[in-house]
Image (tube, rainbow, N blue to C red; front, side, top):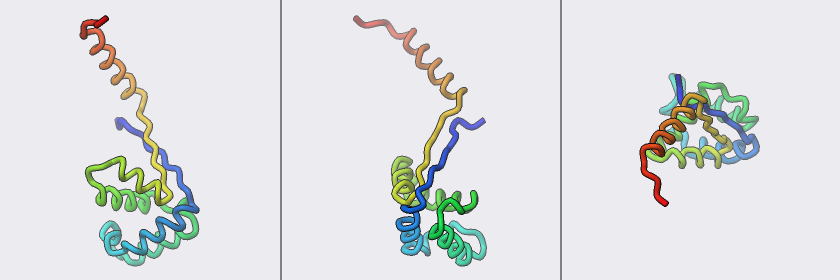
Length: 117
C-alpha cells in the first residue's frame, strides 16, 4: 500500500502561458521523455496545454512530472514550485495508516524520554 496520495489542481490560464512557453523553449529536453513519435506527441501536448492543461492524459502528465523531476532530482520542493509556476499544483495527502503509525512512534518516543521540568 502506498504511503502518499497525490491530488492535482491545475490553473489553465497560467499553464497556457508558462508551461506552453517552457515546452517550446525546452523541446529537445522534453522529447527524451516521450515515447516513439515524440515530435508528434510533443505537438499534441502543446496544443492541449494551449487549449486547457486539463485535457492532458494521465500518461502526458506523468511525462511532464518526469521531466520536472529529472530537472530537479534532489529537491522535491523545487519540483513542486516549478510545477506550480507552470500551472500544475501538486498536493500530497498521507493515508490513514501512515499517519497512525507516525503518531504511535512519536508517542512511544515521548514515553521513553524522561520528562524535564
